[in-house]
Length: 324
Image (cartoon, rainbow, N blue to C red):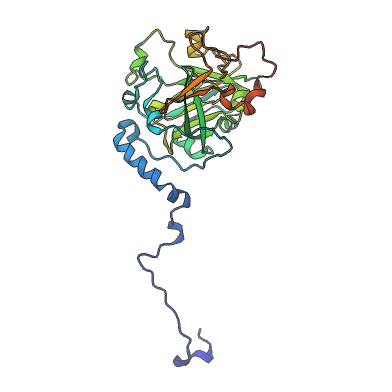
């Protein structure tokens, strides 16, 4: 009720009536800051999806991820075009120009099983991983055993975050990664002399290392199929063939796996495959590496320059063949 003092109409205080205008939006509808600053990435992704074929067109965008500046590559980032058009992915062919063929691979739906010696085995949809894992961008070096190299801004999450969810048993000693086998879109699978499926592995200690990274994107976009999309594994101190691409199964075991190239040529490719310029490949030197795109030749570094993070993993293993 209006107090007696103000019942007189002429003495009522002035009242301001606020009317909503079309341009007055509630705060709840304001675009998050991270998305604003990544709008160019989003626009580029949209254009790229139209041009990249059915594999990319099936995908939604990559969630924004902050760059982790703890991992400094010490070299310039390789041009995206070089990284996405010069690829080793034998399931699509044994040449470097498999990118057009790889676009046929369906990227959705995609599931990754984590099984074996774990308390809580799970099957994840790729979208589930994108939503629940702590995504970040890391600029890592990649050194191929063929003596070429590149520097890539990967988006992904630490493998340790995934392992924390499934809870490895104390008896688990190794982690094994298995690549998809899709004969209808992977013509390389017809080469039956290869030991398909592509399998790689590492120790549980290597998997727990902070550098071990599950990659779901590159250059602010979802990881394309030719680079191992929708999800691959990367340990930057090892030669690139240790990185499993287009992963469908992660298995924890107490048995050391024999990986794909080790089965084919164990005298050339071992289980550990750490980068060492002083240990040549049987058919070429590893002392120098050629940077993709520029062609610059630079000295190879032991552990690919990541020795401060990983050298202690190999204490007491001098009897092992630690280098490829």
